[in-house]
Length: 424
Ligand SMILES: *Cc1c(COP(=O)(O)O)cnc(C)c1O
Image (cartoon, rainbow, N blue to C red; front, side, top):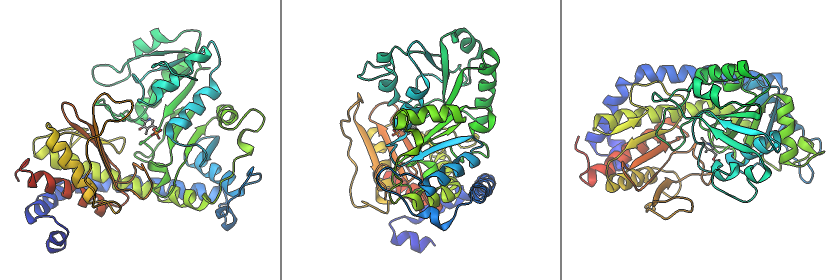
């Protein structure tokens, strides 16, 4: 094996170091595999209950009337996520679009949206109007409030109680830390917060941004009372095969409200062709539990090797994990660039290019990104990125297969070693 890695550019000391760390992680890997096994059966049972048939694999064009594949896929998502209804569409362009549809569909002028997990993911700032923007919720007279997580990164119940008023129509919760340094919230904690909100006012719609969290645990927020969960198909639930798309799952009424925004009033979910994508969506969802497990193992390994080398990791090497994102504080721009170079070198696509820091719209600092993915921008595939600022955090996620993700981590170590930035 060591010879095989040597041929692929990995020194013996890096191979042996990684192997010894992997050996110490066996117990955690068994736990991750058990979660995947549990979720695989859940998904398979949803396929059976929804009567997925060969006919579901073909798609529709034009209006997409009577698209049996699309309608059955939506049943599969609803059953697997313990929800009444689902929208799963290639025409939803990304996670932000799915979240915007869910928000606009369920909020009206005079309503207030309350985020109880702090400031939401960057791309939602303009949707909400936190940053003034054309077409935002704010422009339609929908106001916004937020409560931060407490010093331990947990829900601040007294603050939530104080922030809820008679106009609070919807509460938003972001499960994953995304690209911030806070903790990721467990589904259990999310369930407790939802129960608390409902005890104050049962009519408040509780929506969870579920991005990066799907299949990381054996339950989803809809199993513990969330009215809506929303996510992207080029992350966990697409299993690496969905080429585009987003989903919205939850209570029938709220999913329908969203459908009238996704298309238009009157048409809702009845139109929208699946094109030729049904097979990729079904197959991707079928693979999603094990693909997510590969990404979870990769995140676990990355935290363990980098922590041993003296870098601070969130989550740390021993904490319970609730999503696929790993951040590592690399402490210098050179180390951040070397890490990303390694991830890029290990990719199946574009392995020969070198990532460079870049001025990105919407960011104050330059950003460096590594991604050699089959699906453009897919972050269930091995990828890494980070802003060029202290403490030079890299956010690392994905890995369609465990061996390829492990190789990516070894290659990142190799690049840091070659630059003299680590010594084993
Ligand atoms: C990825 C992500 C989104 C949506 O991002 P898109 O790039 O629009 O798919 C929203 N929230 C969180 C926490 C995310 O990780």
